[in-house]
Every structure is written in C-alpha cells, then in structure tokens.
Image 1: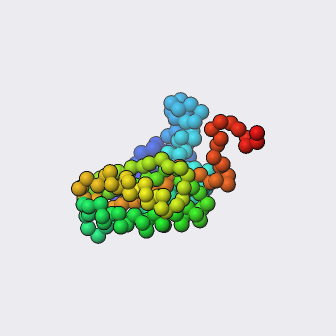
Image 2: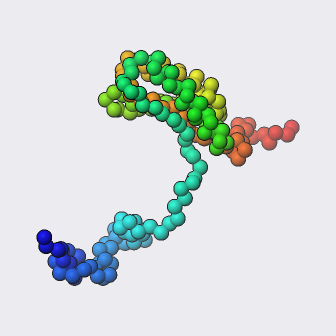
Image 3: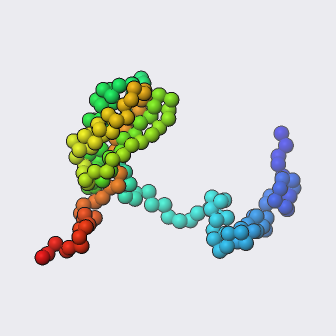
Length: 174
C-alpha cells in the first residue's frame, strides 16, 4: 500500500499542502462572487465560526405514526388521529403557542409522501385539530393504501407576544 504524497502544487505527489497552496485555491472566488467570495470559499471548506442557536422558536408542531401494515380505508387512520391530535395539543400548550394551520401528512404504500393543510382560527385544541384533520382525511381517503399518517399545526403564534392584529386599525378605545 503506497502513501499518497503531496507536491508544492495542489495535487497528489510530493509534500503536504502549504498555506500558500490553500490560499491559491480561493483564487477566483472574489472575482467571481465579489466581496462575499472569500466567505463563500470558507463555507465551502466547512469553516464557519458563526454561533449555532439550536433552541429557536418552533415553526411547527406535529406527531405521526407508522402503521404495521398498509391501510386502505379511512377507519384505521381515523383511529390514530385522536392520540396524535392530543399529543400536538400537549406540546403546543407546553410551548404556549396556537396554530393557524392544521396539516395532515400521508405516506402512501409506494412511499410517496404528501401533505394537505387547512387554515383555521388560531387554536391548540385537540378537538379542533381532530375535526380539521378528519375532514382532510375524508377528502384524501380514496381507497389508496397508506403506511403513515401525521397531524400537526403550522404558522404558530404566541398570543402573549403576538396579539391578533386589528384589521381595522383601532387601538381598542373609542
């Protein structure tokens, strides 16, 4: 087994790459991409010193389940919707948010995946989520087989921080 060796150029042969070689590989990035070129070059090499913020606000809250077998009637997925809606309600209550859109996710027997959503008044109620999800399921249950179903809410809002805007511009006082 022979070891690869590096030459002074940027290809395999004699000695390890020098700082000069690494710098030369960015040649052309500024010319091609302007002042963002050097930054883009660093990103392309995996060098990024920006802080990672893993705990940002949720953009959606959902729950899903996979069936043990493919189901082709609306009855089996419908039975699963209630516990999923309850789980979504609990998570939304814990985060103190309301959802303005209910989303239902389906995965068909051939593994194609699609979602359907419906705009609603801001809610976190499992009953509201279940009602809308059931309507979506009814419209999509066309006899095709499903292997996964999920339900959730998107377009989240925190009523304490984001009060519903007044469509007429009144401040609340006459």
